[in-house]
Amino acid sequence: MAREKRYHVYIMASAGRVLYAGVTGSLMARVLQHKAGEAAGFTKRYSIQRLVCYETFRYINNAITREKQIKGLRREKKISLIEASNPAWEDLALGWGTAVSLRIADSSSPTALSE
Image (cartoon, rainbow, N blue to C red; front, side, top):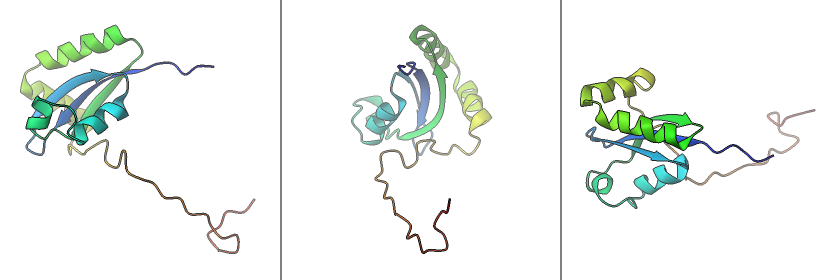
């Protein structure tokens, strides 16, 4: 069974809290583009690299409508939206795209899982 497609409206911020809202069908890929500075223009110029808020939608038309709503909000409302789910403005994508190393536990180790 194929996995259902999802669309994301997201808000990214710079360290100085310059905001950018966008829509994408692949949140991880798009956020990693912002973090790598591959998204030319506004986000690159202002070093907007922290994912601070996102919403998920089943249908692209709903996601686009929501993105337009968010872009039309006054800054204070955008800040309220972010702080409702992320009061500390933490990067919700911290660690995305970094290499992960796995370690296989020795079966004689006391921390090894047993059946």
